[in-house]
Image 1 (tube, one colour):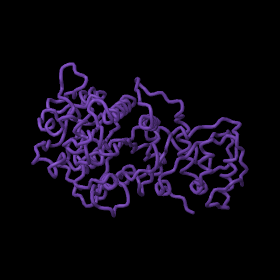
Image 2 (tube, helix red, strand yellow; image 1 turned 180 degrees about the vertical axis):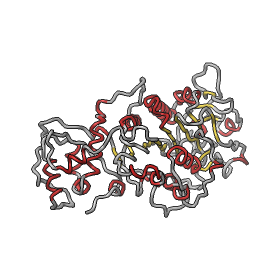
Image 3 (cartoon, one colour; image 1 turned 45 degrees about the horizontal axis):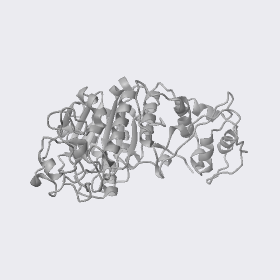
Image 4 (cartoon, helix red, strand yellow; image 1 turned 90 degrees about the vertical axis):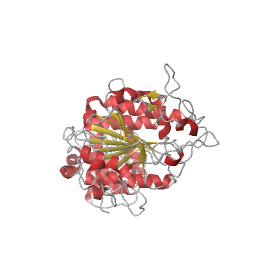
Length: 455
């Protein structure tokens, strides 16, 4: 079996664990692969971090149009209260018309610094109310087209001509927290890593001293590289995580040339994620989402050539008991706001080379339902953070909440196609070209960009 970068993408991604290195490691090809990467070669690389709020986040509660009186007619029990002096249960005014949910208080100083922009009434022109279809369309960048097999972010990587010589960087595109997301599937190649701490380095004297021929994974090969790889893995310095991976039949990847696997291993070995301390007092929330963002910060700081990173967070499907300043939505927003703000704080000056872009497949109905929640809607709000962001503004056109202004007389209408936001980030930040290849069937017109980035 020929091992290519595509193998990392096909079936949900591959998590690799690093190995301890002895002064004399053995096979020459392994030494060349492990020590090939230069940790400083891509330290100034532009990075786009995408965060998906899966489940349809309620944009009308995240970024509250408190000056639109219709909100309080449509949501007599669910609308976030208008800003009030000294009240902790009300929206935090940011421009006289919009306010942030109080759980997003960590965003306020970033907004005021000009490093956070909001695109409201944003989303997909496709009217599906299916989570599965809407997420698929948003990640493929092709609303309504199920024939597009890869993700727009993977295509954007390939559309950066000045970076083509760096395609071999094994950590160029990384998803933290689980299986390979749709958005990164494609020819560019990507890694899905559940947890960087799986890439631990074992000390000498490991407990499992596997013989070279013991328990071969499926896809067994008999060439010399296979035998040398197996011998290397039998050393007592093999990390427990690597042993687990080996046992779980992912050996097809490791029993090929091994070059990409070991380059990634070597790069991650230098990061030492178990010993990481966030900078500037950044406080990530406990749980998978906070850990994912913290590990993305580690990759950015490590200068391993990271160009795009992805994380997601669920629990936004608030059909019942949504709450206002307390409840299910507030809990999710508190974790979300704290996590994104911690990532921004942790990266510090490096945010001049980083853009953080959040998204959700659609919003919630403008009118509350009978179970204290909201149903599947249409438009929502996206957040964009970074040193080059044209921040301190709510961008896009507000459609209004009069009944005749609502999409299908029930939802916040969309005035910004999500592809315009994605295209602006890909072109202005990553330097991608040929937008027609990144967003098939969509005529990207830069004059329609919302101005989320300066210049």
